Image (cartoon, rainbow, N blue to C red):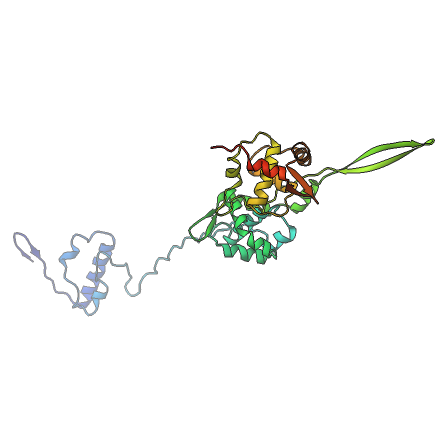
Length: 330
């Protein structure tokens, strides 16, 4: 042992057998955490005929027996957590089409968007919607040409969101799509219930001799419906809402005239019906006449502005003059 003011050096010479025993002792002490402070003072046992393999690093040495390594501690594996929740299943688009679950074309767009977006996970394009039309065997030239209108209505209904080059379905659209495809019956059944009911009235004709002849006549109550394919926001033209703002409107007779003019002259619709007038009232969010047929009849008889030919509503010359010289707002 050599000692100075700052260092202490210990030199020792051992036989191979003694060196192995000493190495084992030092190794056991290191494993117990007692040799960290003094291990650095011993040189590597490179001269003990392979004993360095057993004592390479005292602090990190693995405990071994005299000849064989102790069995290694088995690795602890945490159980793999798998998502056992069954993925929600939806009917195929073909099944939805066969059951005819959506009630309007806007609802169809919402359903198509739901399936095209992988149930709300991805974005989709206009072409993806066309593909869904084809998949459900509903694509024709009319629907394809009016697709922009249907998409616009879905956007206005807060169902889908237009992006730069594609679309995404909103939470409101996802919930609406789920509600539609969860229906148990066709929407056409619901519409049939809204068809007009026939009211039978009995008329007593004039008496002929001693007998009275009775006749039964059927009066069909007309029930108009909203037309979803009309684009009230035509490119380069005023919308219906903006159009009627230019006129001082006093009653429904004037509204019937203006609606007919907008439909025939601005939108260029050749056949205007009561359904068109009903849709216009709904579009501008005005109270809809409870009896559209009677409302139109009043406009024809009281003002002479409109006439009907085979159920098609047309503007008379008197109606044209009324619009031409209307008191417009500044």
